[in-house]
Length: 231
Image (cartoon, rainbow, N blue to C red; front, side):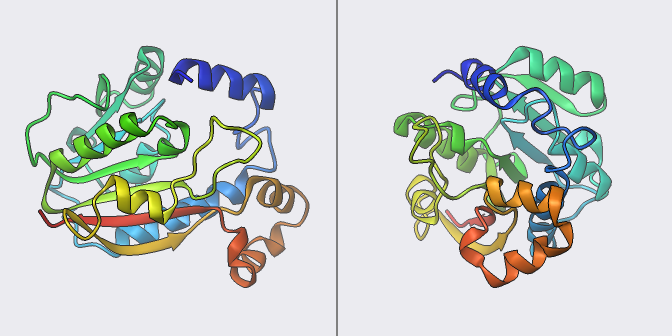
């Protein structure tokens, strides 16, 4: 399924308020858990926030960039790429000091080893075609500096009822990013719960959210994985 069709189908089924922090009470703790996993991952690596160059792949409207900016990364050192021009234009309007580029993540104009950190958030879940996923992963490795980092924030389970979702499991990460040969795993941080459970708890029993995540780790469906490029 093409990216534009994927988003159209998603919001047609789920509704425009599906991921609205203001209008959907099921979003808040899911977002907090996701943010906690990403921030914990960033804290685990040695990153010069004053001078590092960062690329966010599949940046969409720039939602993931918020974390980087509020943690002190200089906007002019952040680059975001997405294949949908309308989402890039929206991101440019929200964060004009960030470098936004509309391009295919499989083939960018960046130089080899240009970035200290390359990130993605819930992008690989949407990419079910194996060759496309491999090409994007290869490009992410190529533009990452040697001993630089790649952070993957994504859902680890596939959806048996919806073939357009393909989880980014650790097994899939190892295959896509040639773990052990070109990259190594530095840490894995658990994040949001499975959406039906997490959204229910966020809206109905928020005080139980992180307790459930701690005692039933199987329900933690989103993970943030930190890779380091070694070759």
